[in-house]
Image (cartoon, rainbow, N blue to C red; front, side):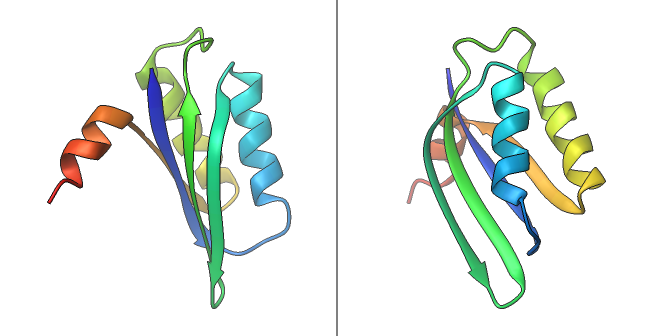
Amino acid sequence: MKAIVTVIGKDQIGIIAKVCTLLAENGVNVLDISQTVLQDYFTMVMLVDLGKCEMSFTELAGILDEDGKNIGMSIRIQREDIFEAMHRI
């Protein structure tokens, strides 16, 4: 299954490294990544593959949320099909 991970918050050193390490440690492969800094705010959108992730989607979402809070960022994950349905015109 594929999913979309979004990361938003005040820019700081090491955000991409921290998020990618967390994902890799949980068997999540990053397929594509887009990031930018808007004034002082960091934004990143990632397409990821959960095929080798051994935990449930809900558990992974909780870990991402908690780790995001620990670094002062908002980290969210949505299933690709739900993301696409929400953003269809």
